[in-house]
Length: 157
Image (cartoon, rainbow, N blue to C red; front, side):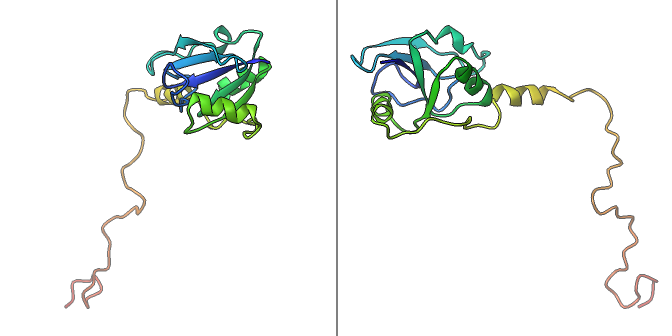
């Protein structure tokens, strides 16, 4: 049977599946027949995402995530992996659910963009300089209101 790669919040089978695949605190490579596993440190939120290829060996074909962006999802598919969404489960529970066929493989990423896409967007179009707007707002008011008195704005009482 193929091994599993699990994005985990901790380094035990009782740890929760991580809600962020690319920045999981730990990655567990688990043999589902023996339930023996290896632990690999994840990366910090402010570090660039590492390539999944470093973790995926020829015998890893199933990946368990709590969320996954389009870049990581595409990379896993290109490596021949099947991705399973297992939110709010421990690593052990998630593996058992996948083995028992209770969880279907993902057909697309769970997030529209990766976290890095948002960071890249923040850094674009942030030049120094004067804005070109005229500051009039949506109303384009020019102070020519008719007022609420009987004079209709003509100075009469």
